Image 1 (tube, rainbow, N blue to C red):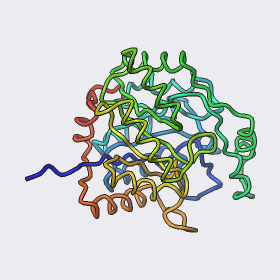
Image 2 (tube, rainbow, N blue to C red):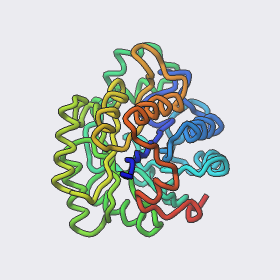
Image 3 (cartoon, one colour):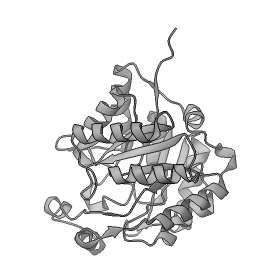
Image 4 (cartoon, helix red, strand yellow):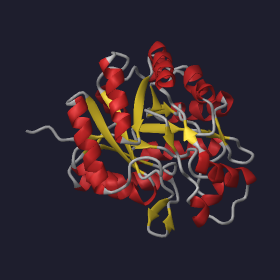
Length: 310
């Protein structure tokens, strides 16, 4: 009997792109983040990609003490792989962004593979009423914002991760990021299997058209051959469409309210778990099995939940 294909679902239930005013369902407090993540794991997410927020106004924060309460609750309730952001917010320094992953030594952490313009200001046209002044400032300031991850920054992050046994979800927002990753692979600073998260539809990165997805796939195949595991992240309305196209081509997938607030045109998702269930139904309709957390660990060669520091 032929071996059935397995796909890893990553879920990002919170994050720094959207703000609390944009959806009442976006988790903010530690309890809300823990509940959202645990529900997503129950729905089928093998990996949980996590950010923290200030519980007072929902501002993104990389304070490890804001991560600690929900990390412990999630770990106690599920065996899902916990993936801590090193992206944080484009408005933070690299040192700020690295603090949680340095302290908690997770199995997996995200890593943006280059500096880039990160334009969120078009959201101002869609969201006129914002509750907190920082929300408007963050969006407006992105007109003149470069998300900084230089070669030195990336090398420093990789060395910290290597010392902690942390592997990375390499977030590639454009073709240049794939070439940057190939550079670090050639130098021996990263090791296969590479977990390549292709990100589509952020202004400043590659677009959200299916042809953009195909271009990213062709380039990754040429650069990495069988040394990478591919995953699809479509921002906003691109989420389900690109994840479905990618899944049909053998990709892993990522969903969650960090990446898109929607479950259908004009309808907000009630939770990240709702998005996980939707993409899970797509995978199963394609006769693709959903990977368990343990299978995800084996596919990505992770160190295991017993070796984290939380």
